[in-house]
Structure formats: structure tokens, C-alpha cells
Image (cartoon, helix red, strand yellow):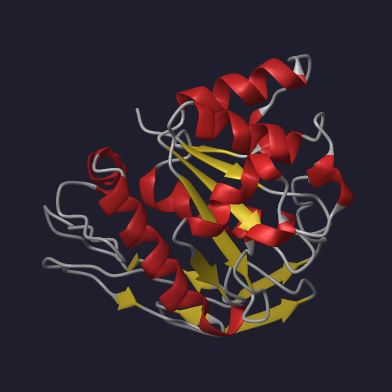
Length: 248
């Protein structure tokens, strides 16, 4: 099983590390990505788990934020960001710098400690929030080319018709009710398909009343009502956001 190790520094790259983890886990399966704050379970020893995960990895993504090269921890032997990258280099594991934002400049050898100067020569990728969709597509495509086993992982995750940059699902056997899918689809569907919704959706009959108190519901701010409804439908949603994983 291929593994993508996501290396990052708290305060300089944990936000992008979370984005990469979510997107790559969706594409290739949650077991493929290793991110310390998510993957190390309570009671496990932090150091051995990190190093063992690096050694099992097919590629290490080094998330590089604006202050990454200037961080004093990078000059300390016991710094875990440094130790993870050095372990990958020692094991011959590809290290791909991922620059966070359009203002983060590529690494310069003169700004790095001697054991990490190789990173300045490694081809990098970039993720910018304003070009998020295209940048994520490129990252997925480059990783799939670098680690061919990821194609098999993507097929296991989404079926044999999966393609880089999209998800395909086929509905067979007919459907008597509505079918709701948030991504690409192929095949004959006998019910109702609703895509790219940005508000309340009512696929049946009758009145509907929606009151929203939470900023997000089902990930896109919309409400999905399935089935043949002959009466009024009222929904009230409350609650806060789900807490994100803590960074290192």
C-alpha cells in the first residue's frame, strides 16, 4: 500500500497540510495519507511512529510556508520537521516541496542548513487558495505519475472507472426515487439528479420551510429532501463547526 507522508510545521503549514490530507484521502483512500496530528493514536510513542511512517512512505510532501526556511527549529538536530525530511532523504524516498500561497518563494540553498540543501534542487509544487482547484488537480496528477501504485489505490477508492481529477459512479438496476451526488457521474439514472446546489432542495411535492442556524450543512450549505413528500417539511439545524485536527 503506497503512503503519502505529509510533513509540516505548526504555525507555518498546518492549514495546507489539512487541505492536502483531505483531498488526497478522498482521492486515494484515508489509509494512504499520514499526517501526525491525525494518524498517531493516543498512547502511541510519537517519535517511533513518525520515523516508521516516513520509512514506509512512497513520497514525502514537505509543506513550505512563508517563514519555513527562517524558522530556528530547522537548525536543531531534534527538530521533527527536519528529522522527518532527513530520514526520507536517507531512505531514498522522494521529497516534494509544496509551496503554500503565491508569495512563498522557492527554497534557496543559502537559506538552508547543510543537511537540507538538496531541497532547493528538488522540483516543487504550489498550492494557492485562489487557484485551489487547478493546483489540487496538478498535485494529484504529479503524485500519480511519481507513485504509479496510487492509480490502483484510486481505483479501489472510487471503482475501476475512476479518472485523475474526477470521480465516476454508475447507478444500475434503476432508481425509483431521487438520486443526489455531489461530484461527476455517468450511467443511466431513473430518478432525479441534483448537482451543484447552493440552497434548499425539495425533490418531492408540497410545502417546505427551512430555517438555518449553522453556517454549513452537509458541506455545501444546502438541504436535501428525498422522496415523495405530500405535506409540509420543516427543518431546523443548529450546532457549531466540527473541530479540526490539532497541528504539531
